[in-house]
Every structure is written in C-alpha cells, then in structure tokens.
Length: 463
Image (cartoon, rainbow, N blue to C red; front, side):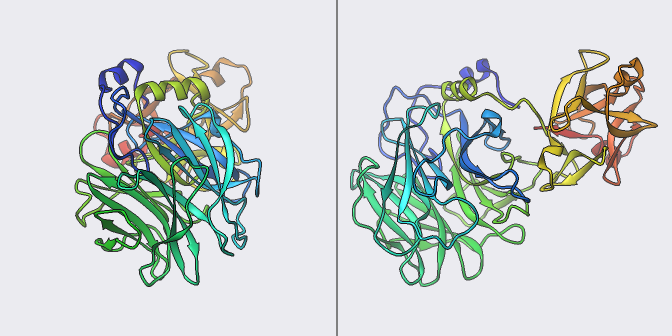
C-alpha cells in the first residue's frame, strides 16, 4: 500500500541521488539540493492477450517499495509520439546530471517487427508530470532496427551513452554519445560477444558498470561488467537466468534502501505472465534469488519498461498530477498468478492474462449495507456487485433490497494467512469469509481452527 506523505517525509533525507536512478544509473556528483530517493516510477507501454488493451505510448506507475505498482492516470498514456510510426515500445527513463529526466523509446507501433527504423523518440521532463521538447533523433544510417534504448552517464567522457539493439550482420548493441539528447556522435558497436544479443540494460555501482542482456542463442539473461563502460570492454560473469517459458528485456535496479538489487525480466509475450523478478544482496556475485509472484505485482498489462528512483516530493507530485487508479485488483494469496474476476456472472479466480482484462477490475466502494465495510462494483459492468447467493459469489445488479445490500457487503480484516494481506468477512453471515474453492468464489465458515489451506484460500492482496 502507498505510504502517507508523513511516512515519506520521515523516510526521505537530503543527500545524493542513488546511483540506481533507473535502468541507466546516475553517476558523478549530483546537486546537493536533491533529496534521496524514497520511491520508484515505472515507465512502460501496454499489450493484452487479445490486443484490446494495447497502447504504444508512455505509461507510468509508482511504488513505495519497488515491488507493488499502481498505475497512474487510470493506466492511460501520459505522453504519445506524434512522428515516425506514432507509437513507441521499450520506454527508458533516465535521471540526468541536473536532476531532470529524459525519456527515450523505440519508434515502433504494434507487433510487426520487420520495420527498420533509424530513430528513437525523445522527451524532456523536469519531474515526470509534464513532457516537453518531443523529438526524434537519428542514431545511424544502417538498414536495421533501433530497439530498446538504455542510457547512462560516462564521467570519463563528460557525456551520456545511449546503447540500443541493432544488427550489423548479427544482433549487437550499438552506442552513440551525447551531451544534450539532441545531437549524437557516430554510432559504433558497443557489445558483440560472438553470439546474437538483445535488450541491454546498464547500471553503474561505484566504478563498475553492469550490463544485463539476453543471449538470443539460448534465450537466457546474463550479466556482464566493465571497469570503464567503454565499448567492447565487458566480460560476462553470471550464469544464464530465466523464469517461465521465455524471457527478455532485463531491467536492473538498485534498491533505494540498503545495498540490494532487483532484476526484472519481461515474459516476452502478452499471452504469458507479464514480469518475473530476482533479488540479490551482491550485484558483483552470481547469486540471484527468484522472487515469487506473491512478492510483487507489476503494473497492469505493462511491457518492457524501465524503473527510476524518485523522491518523496516527486512521488506526491506524480500522484497529485496523474492520480491513482479508481479501481483495485484482488490477488489470491496461495495462487498469486490468479486474480478475482467475474465470468458469466460467476465470481472466480483465474490466472492472468485473460480476456476481457477489465473483468478483474473493481471499484471498492463503501459497503452498501454499512459504509464502514466495503462492496465490490464491477468496472466494466457498473451497477453490478459481487454478492453471495446460497453462499456462492455472483455478479448481480442491485435489486434495491436490504438483503442484496447485505449480501454485497464485506468487512475487510487482516489476512487470515498473512496480516499484511486482507480477508473479507461476510456482513450478514459474519462467521463466513470470502474464499476460493476449485477457483470459484464462495463464502464459508472459517473458525480459529481452520486449516492453513482454508486461511490461504480466504486471503487476498488489494492491489
């Protein structure tokens, strides 16, 4: 759950910006007036299984812990390209040396990838609340793609490096250098290890540059490092990583607190899970621990994005400017890839993605029978609520009766399996709790002696 402004103020202290300012790190000495990062912003584009929710524009989400994400602007775009293909993929957000931001993105709209494009989209932003100076910059004159940009400051050059995926006979990473993200140096090969590669993300920790990438030969993610960040100076130091059946788009971020790191990977296809993640306490080692889907919730329908650290004031400014969602999702505790949804007017939990994706979106409103409790109104069928009928959960329109209002009202309590999650007790049958059984929702009695499985079935994360 988001922290309050008071909690943010307590957490935020004046100091240098973390070196993990998002997929491309901030190096050198930042302005001493800038506050320490206390939260995170996530930039992404969207795709859904049936393409109904596809959006090839810049979207933003925020998080206080870097794990549970809430989309801004009701998951609608905050910036849309107006030149080139008029669509973007792979947006990358970099905090520059002056504390402001620049956004880079692939100039590509849709799912057809045989279009060779020499340009990247670029925006400037002081605070991610507005995006100005929109332009495209030409990166090369080759007949190839310009995909998945990442950028970082190179102190030895007093310039930024922009690294991206391209093909010069083999899939490699190219680099151009710039001081203003308007004019760039001639392109050159940045990393060509002898096998095809895709999707670099580069972050510096101290004097070491870390690059994570996909090896197209085996489909795994690897980490490489360099003491200079210069072209062709990296040595791979990790074993291959993968969760799920396919993965790409590694995203490396240092935690705002402590020395830990997280590595994210996109599942490659919108018909699969959106993201996987790992954690480590030692970026220089070869020991990444997979995070379970219970541990994190990516932004809804997010694809191939980037994460940047933000201050408490920036977090508050983003929420004020764009707004948090007017809806929630309910994630199952013991089946964390499944979310509460309605299907044929039956309440159930299903593994996401599914269509229509809006079936899992709920307005959690004051309880129809008791404003201190809650009711769940469908977003795509407004006026219909989850209610129990013969103890089974249905999606029905209110008939205006006291019985319906009681059936559709639940008291939110600490999770029966985990107090940091939530459980929902029936208002008018108060010994019964909302739970799933065979993936179908119902209300059942749950006493203090209920089994661990029963308690888990009745525990959900509001996200």
